[in-house]
Length: 301
Image 1 (tube, one colour):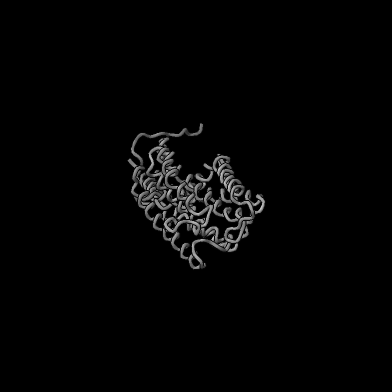
Image 2 (cartoon, rainbow, N blue to C red):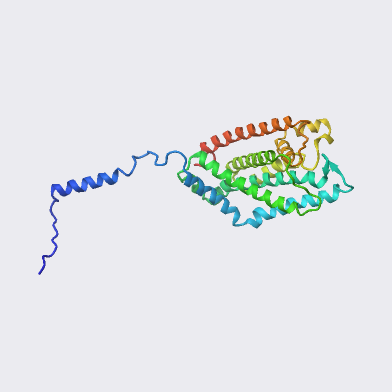
């Protein structure tokens, strides 16, 4: 018979212990010391995963998050065109429908960027899943960028849906005179509202808080931003109020990209100054959002 395997209960030979120790040390060398970061630089995979999660979340209910807001905003075009655009009325040298169309697109983009960003953290706090945002190996900047990028994506998708639908309305022209202004003011408008929405989501403890921000801050600023009129028609006091409303510069600058004219100022340099001001405002709001998010206020503990 062949020799049967033998089992020993005594101590292993020194050479076996040395081999085991060497292999164990080789394995341990693959693991960093406690507290040493394993991801250096930007966690691109984690950032992409968070962004994809945010996009898939609103795309699963795209009828509610993309198409319904587009149709609702389109109704403003229909109603105001029929009510105020009769008699070949011209505003800034174009018919009334062409005048208000860019402002409605910008307003739809901004409002939906806010709605998306203001929901994520709040829903996590309400449902007890906020840990899903805080536990992954993402830095504060990566977490903020992923959330904001998802919100901007929703705003852009609503804007594209709106633009496509408005092209079917008689008399509307969306020919772009200055594409750079369309891109700059459109993306910066969505960015500003995404950052404000993220701050709102951090601060809010229930959905009523978010609704209050929407009803008493976002909607008034949107409707009083010159979307449906030029501010030259207002009393000087109200013109001054409009000129401290950042939404006015976003919507007027976005409209300038299509029409080549705006009520920001008489020269293109005034539009450039508005573009610079919106960029600086976004930078300031981004810094505030970063430090609030980094502090863990109302998110941790």
